[in-house]
Length: 347
Image (cartoon, rainbow, N blue to C red; front, side):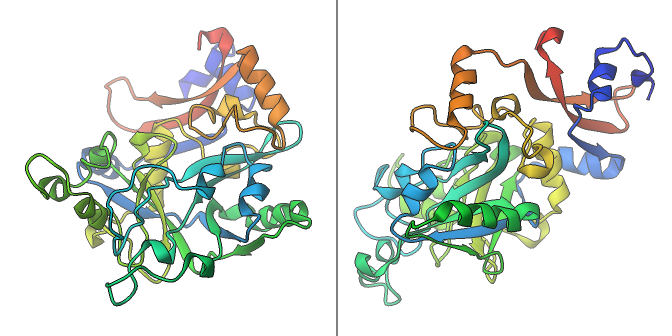
C-alpha cells in the first residue's frame, strides 16, 4: 500500500513499531455489502471462547481478589424484581454479567473474562409449574466465566495456583456450555424493553409486560441473553447449554464468527489474549476502563496499584482506536485495523 512508503508518515511509524495488533480484511465486496445492509440481528456461536465454572462458598471472595471488576454483586440480591411471582424461565432478580480482566502483579493484562450468575432452581418454578424449585440450601453457589479458549489450560493453572485453601471448585465445562453473541444494527441502541416489539406490545395500556419480555429473551431452562457489558452497540451476549438452541436464534440468522469479529473490530474493541498482548498490554491503553472492566473502588486485587496510579494521574499516552481505509472512489475493499495511536498525533 502506498500509505506505508513514506517513512515520515505517523502511520508508517506506528506500523514499523509493531503497534498493529489486530486486523480484519473484508475483500469480498458481496459479503461486505450483505453485512452492512443487514438490518435485523444476527447470532454467532463463539467457538474461540470457552466456559469455566466456579462452585463453592468462597467463590466471591476468591474472584474478588483476582479480577479487576467488583463481583460482590453476585453474592447478594440486587436490582428490581420483575414480578412478585416466580417465573418459569427467568430469575425474578436481574443480575447482569460483568466484564473483567486478570493482571500481572505489575498491572499488565493477562486474561479477560465475562462472569455470569446462573439462575438458581428456587428462583424458578419446578417441573409441575405450581411452586418454586428446590430449597436454597440445596443449591451450591456457582458462577460461570466466558474465557478465551486459546489460553484455557494456562488460565486453569493460574486459578488453581491462587486457590490455596479456598473452598471453591474450578472446572472446565466447555463441553457442557457454549458462548453466543447477538449483534446487528437493530440491536446497537436497543434497550431491554425495546429489544422485541412483541414484548412491548404485551400487557395493559402503555405498560410493558415483564414476563412477556422475559419469555422473549430466555428459555425454559432459565438461560437468557444479556446486554453486552462492554458497549450497547455490541449487542447481546450469553452462555447456553451446548445441547440446546439459544432463544431467538433463527436458522437463517446464524452467521460465522468472523462477522462478529468484523462488527467488534469496527467498534474498536479488542477481545482475548490473542488481540490484547498477554503480559505486555496496559489495561487503560486498551480502553478496559471505558469497557466497564475495571472498578476503581472495589479494593485490592492483583495488579491494582499500577492501574489505580495510572488512572488517577490521568496520563494515558496510547489508546486503541479503529481506523477505516477506503480507496479513492470511496468504495471497494474496506480495511478495519486496530492501532495504537500515540498521543503526539492529537488523540
